[in-house]
Image (tube, rainbow, N blue to C red; front, side, top):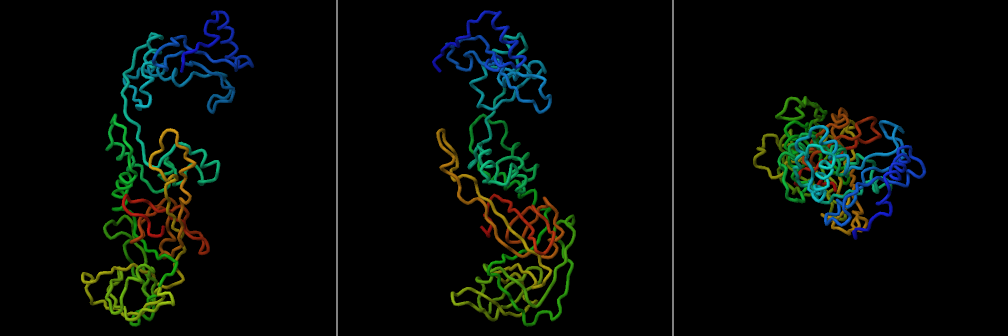
Length: 400
């Protein structure tokens, strides 16, 4: 910062060449040295104050092993490689703006053609930080592809399609303005891609689920073949079982009134005749009658349901929140102070029997519960299918 010269700055050429050879072999003396460009220690641009060109690193390289003991610095290698490879325009994020003079100085000193630097702003997202290694080392996440991580692997494992990311990047353009972007826009684009093609399934949150008995319902269960997506044939078909006793979400059941006509999705209308409650006033059971001649246009409530059969599968629905509670970390902020204490939410649910055929990575919609990606598929009845909630840019999962 104050421009103090290194004590080795005025070494003789002979001494420098001697130390250079020590660096090449990675000797004990060589490991103590680095090679600097002899520029100007009083230059107002501090990136031009004798920047480091080479450093020793005795650790084996992941490609070439231990063939070399020293390597060029990033600042020195980039302008050399760009010029050598005939790069016409070097695309660099604006965080390197203060190093542009350094980039050109190296190419000029080496007598190489200059590349044109084109700057663009880095894409900054809210609630995002770089200290991801800490979360892995301290067991705060399940690995580098954890759905809470703001990395490509992370957001893809959470259900983001690569084409959505590409479209999002194209829409931003190569702006030079520093922007702090919300995640909602990215997930909204993703929803437009997955919604037209992902299959529809039904699930009921297991906690306090409510049984609806239809007194005039079928005495014997029967099955109908239904499309997994009514507007997209590529999702194939599924079997839907119709029974006299069906499961409803508690949230739906508590919204129903006595003698109210409701619509049971993919079946028809029914009229609720009796509502049983516990001592706390929670709905515990419903009794009603089918009214299939009723119009679905006149009902206020359209309810998803599942048959009360042994064929239903167990689900674990998982929702995620941001790793930190502050939208933007300022310089000097310690991310430890803004850690989100709870970033994973799980809820047990029951799913329709056709969910046994889900494959890892398959995206689906649980009607009225949102979009999900299958992380762990069906294996046995005792092990639940693991589904990760996919943000849609608008709503939070109802089970959070």
